[in-house]
Length: 204
Image (cartoon, rainbow, N blue to C red; front, side, top):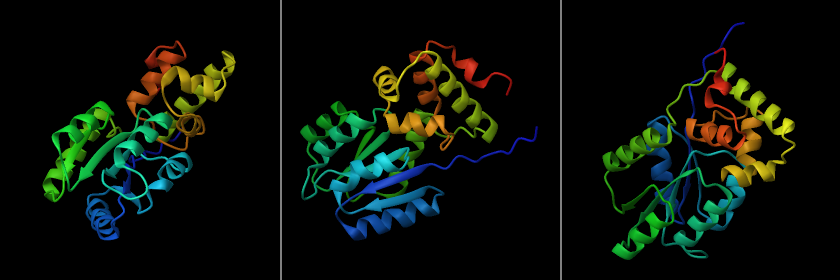
């Protein structure tokens, strides 16, 4: 069987009501080989994340319509595994502490240096195990094993989501081999399905 190597795409969603900031970050991160999408409407965030897979969200704190920290909590309700980096031009110590309690990965103050943002993203990639060049065969094997074990245990997507703390949409994308899951995600699925982690990579 021929195996085709797949270089993992790291997808970043930028949420900021300032169009110029979004376009600037999009250009910077695209040049750094990230796949980038942005939205200036924070109320669209949850819908975007339910429809499309991202590994990292860069989220402004001070926005109209909804506060960034409130939006952080809404994102965590649907996806506990995604990396969230907060941005703010009006930082306070209390906000930074609240951000950390809300499970944001980091908190950057505007304006920030390009090197500072890239360094934060590099740390996030390492922390979340995103730089894993899983080949297509591995992605499909993980998908098959998750489907098989979930079917064997007669678990719904919602039940497995509750066990893992992952969103049903993320699990569905893993099961259909539409994304390359992080090692953290596979570990959570393995634990929830009462299977050893190596079972998902057997024979590769």
